[in-house]
Image (cartoon, rainbow, N blue to C red; front, side, top):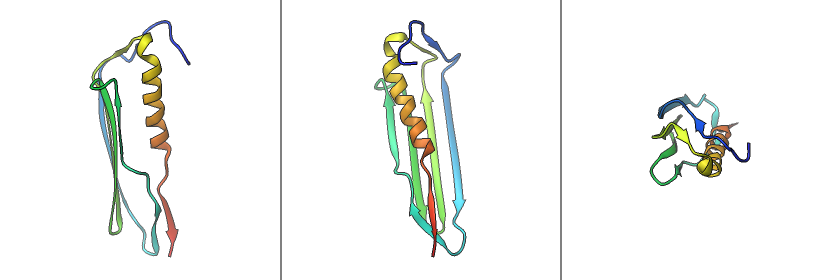
Length: 100
């Protein structure tokens, strides 16, 4: 929804960290990898940090999501929506390998 009349109740504050390690198969190399970012919601209320590293034949991604509130007020919803859209967009980016 573009706007809300009622608060968005997420039930509880939320924190999660996802770590993914990928071994690049022999005969392949990284063509492209998502850039690392940090998106912040309302200064200190929440953040999303996405870090990628390519070392040798390993790719490592760490995604950390932290939201210190459980209720998003209608007046804050447009900013929260943009914040969450940025998270979804970043998570949809792909790691591309090419055969060498």
